[in-house]
Image (tube, rainbow over all chains, first blue to last red; front, top):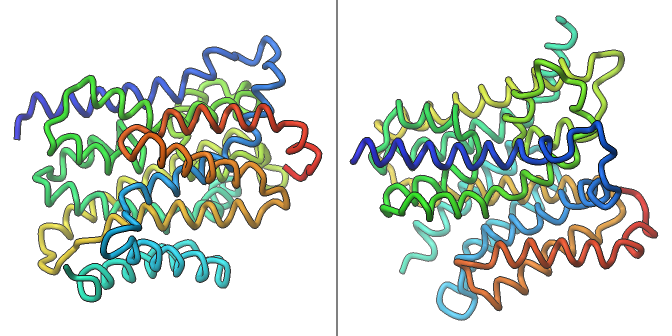
Length: 110
Length: 229
């Protein structure tokens, strides 16, 4: 492992992340009125972005070739059903992850 | 003060669950990739962005260029712009706490502070500050535990990264149940799937964000007519 390289990478990733978090507060400092379209987007975007992130997590699956994304879809289904039933975040995450690990390690072994 | 700490702690418990598990997964993966406790600590303190840290391990082990790392971070974390936008009003009078509140505005912290209200009678900014700090502590703790576990665990950890998917699904389900207006969530999913099919898995995030922004803007009347947001 190259220490300089790794440290620079982490610094770059941290700086870009911090910049993204601060930018809106810098652009719309609250003294001027925030444009109405921006507050509207601030209200609805979280829902849409979370949908996008779920799709992002599933970007690696291939539904046309074996195992047809089944481990990911089944484990995801477990998370949804369990969470609708119990509404317990820890339980949903742990059960879903263990289900997925068992599926790829023992059931859908290629 | 004591009441604020107590309420912040109670509200942060679900995040503790998610962050310890998710941080744990990150710690294991980093450790297995040759990045030990100091590296993991530095990443969890300075980057402090869950999914991005998983991606960071990929970038590091894959030998990505600094430019590629910056662009990837821009794509994966662009959603933070929107969290910021919706917190401008709520955080504008936070004074000395403001820099840390902004720095620590992760997906999960956002989900706890976005209502703009603290539990009865408490100072909103103090409440947010403690929620934010507790959450980051959970994240750091989870990731360090993951490194330690990674050094002793000998069983096959393949698939532990599904913790991130599971976390996003639970947040998605929570949001879905919290409102009767599902149009924004549906737009997010459909626009992303369309862009994934057109642009492919490596480059669909930016087009997806653009399409989501356009769809939400164009469909504003219909979305607001349904109300409940």
